[in-house]
Length: 250
Length: 70
Image (cartoon, rainbow over all chains, first blue to last red; front, side, top):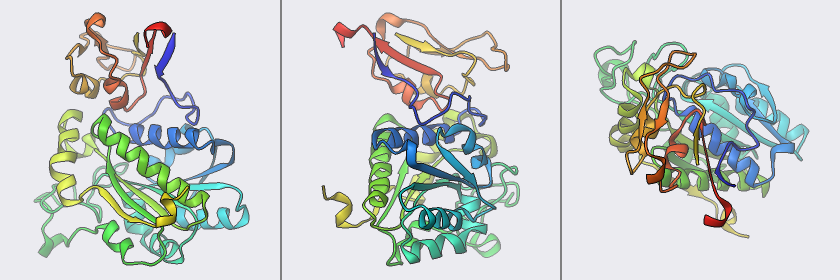
């Protein structure tokens, strides 16, 4: 028997403890497949953030370090500088990366720190019960924007891609969705490019993954899947934002 | 062969949505965690596109095929 599809080696056998239909599992698999393909597992150090993604240390079959809320890029900076031979990636949600960790994210990007960031954007605070996040969409209802987010009342969303694209430091920036096998193939390509950017020493790389949170969006997993494509991807268009030409060479 | 680990499955239904042949469904039975796991209704009609496995957030689906027919 030829196995056509099975669990990547860079994931442990532990069942995911995410809600039904959560895209964290899809993102974990693609990151693990990229680690497998680039043969990075033995020298990889994953930095877990705070939020639902705090569990990543149990799921990625490589060394991991838990960081204080939002400080994953700072911890990753330290690990990469102390052990430059390691491959260092962070796995952060939007409440972590775009809110409390905004300073660490921006400054790591501005310095062009040679680390890779996987940014899971589900437009709310998942673990704590679906409160409004900086990335919450206009008119999106959350537990702390019950009437729907309105610029005059709750403020405007933060588009991390536009923000980071204003800086010199990043070598690779891309936004992806995981809602179909074809889109997952594009997402995998982006993750591989981000990881190769670090392997080549080109500097900061980040892949933003638009991700469904059916529990907090009060939707079925299938409705949430379509919401990502039909609503979220309209406001946050997927695609590569920055590709240093050295990323594509070789 | 499409193997579904019914104890890992959380019954989210994304595989049912992804299947182009519509040969997957959610069981009326419960697994230990209280979810209705996915079941393959008609294995002979499977085209091995892997869409169900790729959309499964819990990696509950493993797909293999006889070597000589791959």
